Amino acid sequence: MSKDVFIRSKQTLAWLGQFAPDDQANAMALAKAMRLVSADEFTTGLRARILQSASETEGAVALLAEREMLKDGDTLLPLFEQPVDRPRRAFGEKALAIRGDMDIGSEGLIAQLITDFSRADGVKFLNHPGPDLLRAPLNTSSKRTLPVRKVILVTDLIGSGNRAWEYLEAAWRVWTVKSLWSMGPERGISFEVIAYASTEAGQRVVESHPTSPFVRSVIPCPTIDTEVSPELVEDVKALCRHYDPYGKVRGALGYRDTGALIAFAHSAPNNCPRVLWAVSKTWLGLFPKRVTASMRETFGSEVNPESVNQRLVAMRQRRLAEGTDWSKAPHGALERYLLLAALAHPPRRRDVIARKTGLTLLEVETLLGEASSYHWIDKDSRLTDAGQAQLSAAKARSVKAVIPERLNLYYPMSLRVPAQSSS
Image 1 (tube, helix red, strand yellow):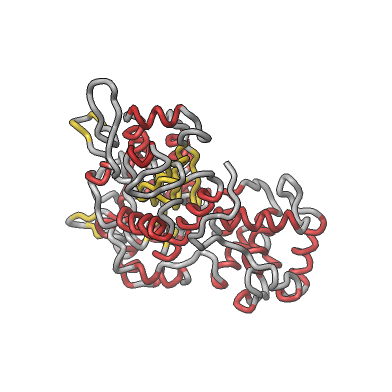
Image 2 (cartoon, one colour; image 1 turned 90 degrees about the vertical axis):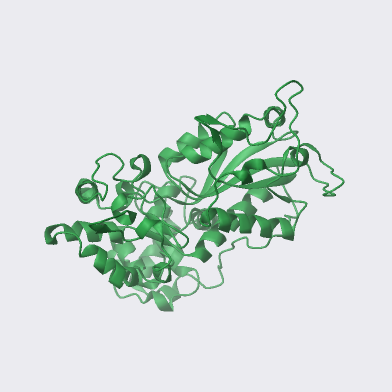
């Protein structure tokens, strides 16, 4: 689905109409910078990351859907109930976290995804297991034969990182969990957090937790700082503060001023600027009260023939963009050329490539591996002479004549347990 459909929709135009004429250009820049994630993209991306993590794990993985943890006043409660007196051995086959606050947004979708994994392979994937299942390699009720070696917390977004950190902290306050973690990943458990999107700042917060979790995401979270043209960043932030429906400067860019520019088919996060979702007597957000149901039909992939030329021009590849009908390109060619174009100029980090191209991090990783195997890039991801030749040939000839269709990308989709695994 083209981003233009979203921009031209009645709801977007009505939202833009609330701004003063002189401010509408900056408001349009804000709307165009939004990443709109469809339900299929959401589940497909998380599924691929979970499968990737499981394939790297010898043993079973415990899957937990992130949600708000229970508190006694300001005190965070442990993830599992445990005795007050020694020995503080926690019991139970299910995580008590399910008693926490849960709405029908991402938690419901992720819970269903986890259920699908456990139904397809209940030995490899455990659905919100309690301490009994985390502790025992063989349980008579589950007939499990693989010990749990990894606990994976699954979420839609790591914005500030606070919510994921609190979930890990609730687990860390269980003596049984702490004991299993202290045994190391080969004999005990390790922690991982998988998010559809994550900000750099939020990821650092999560990684700072004592459990030392490994964090992987499907895409880097777009923000005002990363997606809006540098010359417009401060103007767009000022716009969000000036039109904040709550009339406050603090938090106008979203929870903890994250400034996230992403909306999912199930909801828009509160990390987005309030001007996008808040409602008042004088203001109607683009996604009122964070509900995206009326707009989800306009959500779709960031990489499509309509948008690729704009991305190529932004990457200083105007000659490659001009005169090319990407709708007729062989399968996978569009993604490969976006990658080569992104690598033509630094920086060449995976997250930067993903932002430039609109590809997911998993797609970028797969394409980088492919480019390396064909000697198009060196060990530092710089284009080799062969890689430069691919771009030069594309500018002189049609895309179809350069990269053959047989080089199809591989994305793990099956719930099968990997034939070979490594720690």
